[in-house]
Image (cartoon, rainbow, N blue to C red; front, side, top):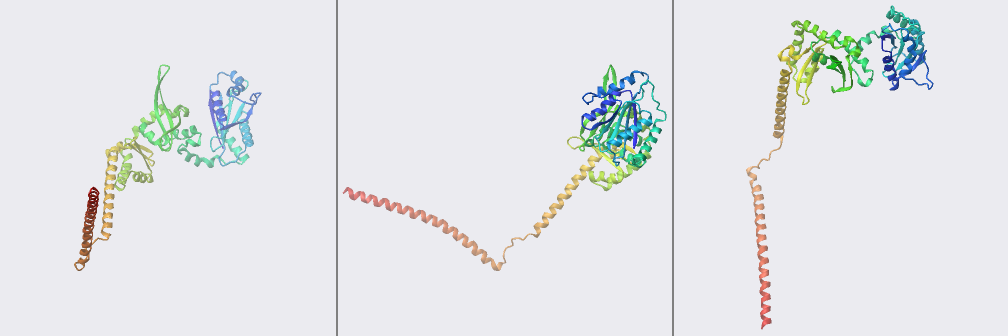
Length: 430
């Protein structure tokens, strides 16, 4: 089990964060200690805060008076709510906060169920409760609780915890804030990059992006960073997160300091010589864009290509996981720039299409050559052909003559009939 202890001067914020989980159905109030109960059994953030007012009112000097503690058992541990309550009470008692008012929240918005405890570090007489050797005492208490309740020791999770650091953010899994924090708090410790663009290329591997924002607040120019989650198509999902949520080491000043330091120590040509050699050799062997990217991945290099809405490539960045460095293509050399690689791949695509058309034409010609030809009969059998033609021509003549004869006989018949009628008229007249 791992315990995390946070201190702040914002009691209302700590209560609101946890109670919002309850309202959304992603958490429950599991247990309370010295908390004023409401008549209807329901709570609000304001009602919960009232239980701490008498403690805070007698001590105005302690700046960070609010305690926000999370207890995190291993996901493989099967822990009932009753056991969670017992462990929380024992933990608070041994840490010196057993007589303090506190609220125990259980969070269920992620696969790993865990508990949050909100309390204050000032007792009812206004004295600040000692926090000497707090982390050491907390670890010892967690080890004791693990043994007592048969939990998996935290040391077994050390390797898993490191592996989880660089896991891409999954928006559907929830707990997005902690997912983002586990990435942006650690990336600058391991990777070197010189520009915000290179940083964003690295973040894109983890479904994240950041942008610099500027604005005026109370007559002063304010600058900061916003982090956004990306879906599988690279589109932003959910709401943005201010860098200040993740501590001062994740803010814009800290990032700019890191960029400046990287510009100084990434000027060494030897640092990028190996990367350039690998990319150049891969380009010689691999023709298409996708095959090129897949080949580099097998060599520990990610390629991030930026394209506009029409599909035209306008940027490329290489992330070398061996040296833990990020390079814009043009910074490695003109031959590795987006323009050079785009022209190279377009030319190769044209050549491949021409080659494919040639193969198709050859295949069609081969099929035609195998088809049976209509050859003329041997001269000895010409009479058969001549007889056929003769019959066809005679039939044609007979058809035309027959039509003519038919027309002439019909005309003669009408003339005879007309002459007969005239003779009868003459006889009558006589």
